[in-house]
Image 1: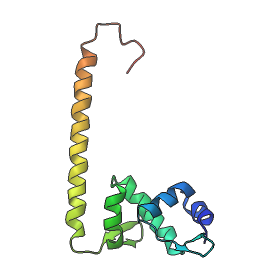
Image 2 (image 1 turned 180 degrees about the vertical axis):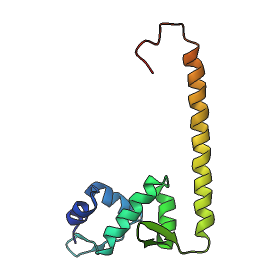
Image 3 (image 1 turned 90 degrees about the vertical axis):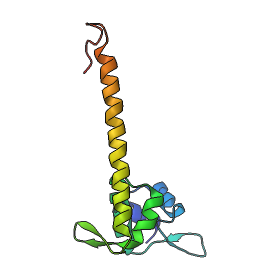
Image 4 (image 1 turned 45 degrees about the vertical axis):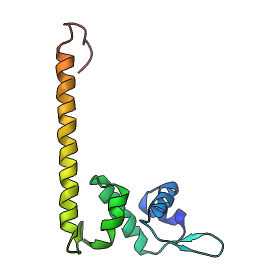
Amino acid sequence: MRIGELSRRTGVPQRLLRYYEEQRLLHPIRRPSGYREYRESDVAVVRRIRGLLAAGLNTATIASVLPCLRDDGDRLVPTCPDLLAELCAERDRIDRAIDDLAASRSALDRVIAAAPAGQLRGRS
């Protein structure tokens, strides 16, 4: 299938599909005409990519873990021995980012709370 069909079936814009190719997440066949030709299995690959992005992974990490995942109904299952440790490390990174954001929010709350009464009308 061509890129327009893959875009239509996955809901992912063509520009983003080209980006996934640049990041080595997708590997379409290139025809002599220069057109990209995608396989039926690429629909599932794009859905995996979207799921992993939603889980907070960056494209470099996705490129390394994608070959080690298989679909099992509505979930992805790790298939490579070292993948679980890498995914746990990514989860720890996300936890640290959440902690940092919570600390930033608390600092802002303290500054906001110090504002003179009446200055915050209409804000929550």
